[in-house]
Image (cartoon, rainbow, N blue to C red; front, top):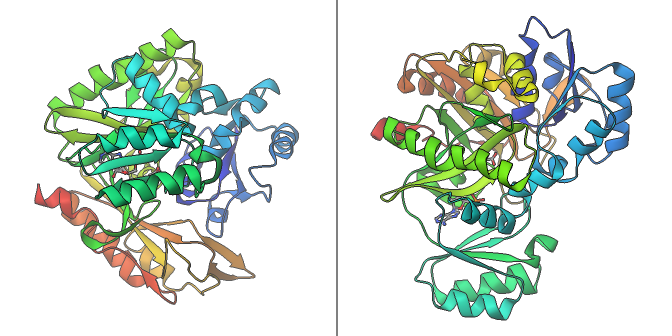
Length: 421
Ligand code: AMP
Ligand code: GLY
């Protein structure tokens, strides 16, 4: 079978790398891809906004399965368009992808179906938002309704910050139309953890747990980023909490889809807070996480294509994938300045040495002739497996220490929370 992956990041590199290992996959294409995905796939220079060109490419090339990486492609309806054209594609349609692209829609879904979440209100009128927020204890969490590159959530520590957040999101439209509506919710405390589950419409299959590190700097300091590194599994997610995730989140999610008539065939990746009152859902993502995918697929022993096929065929209940015991760690090497302004075009060296310790998944890289250069904020994901978390960390960091480009930086504490617990 020929497979097409849509996207350009480390997640897509990991998907291509894993699908390439399937005996049933003849070739892998990736649109648009990046400077490293070419090692395992053929990069196709079509942007994800050019949906009609993607459909034509898939038809002309005889693509048997397309896998969607990023949320904005799902929100733009790429799955609907491929399906109309009779093409097989992995991911929810636009109507169900609103669970990620509208936080108001997600909150209403959770409330309707009894999925535990933070107490909240949502508003399209900033005056009403101010009245509601004034009655909430500090800190207050304020979220732009729409997609905002992971930056639309503000945790306000003072009344002044609450006021500023409402002004920025709703009045100044700092995140554009994403700020047409706002969700205001209580601040929850506890370790964060993410779950990935394939959902075929009537059942689901849980992947092992993973934990991202969203802040740019060690000890969770600095600005929020797309994610600076992950490890799996997460010891905080005890078997008791996992059972709660199944009964209170996943069972109710699937029942809710049915009750609301939403078709969902794809990955669901809820962000969870493990509070003292149990598991609460912070958000739904309707896709694979980045960089969660890098650690999860490194641990998957079974054929990913079998799992994706079963999702689309509605036969997930028959699948029992095998996972490597031990742990996996992914350390992101980023461009100095990220997530704010950074320079691109820096020459990357040391990858052969890094590959002795870890798998090097590329994100913001591009080939300039034969020279590999940086082209984004998150540049590489050094991903290693080990018999335990300590070994996986040691290998991922040996790889991170081996790569070089001007102003490279990475967090030193990826996975440390897992060791401390
Ligand atoms: P979200 O995009 O909704 O996952 O929010 C981004 C980040 O903001 C999360 O990963 C949390 O670290 C934080 N966050 C979101 N909602 C809350 C909440 N209700 N309480 C505390 N932290 C939150
Ligand atoms: N790593 C967080 C995300 O993919 O949304």
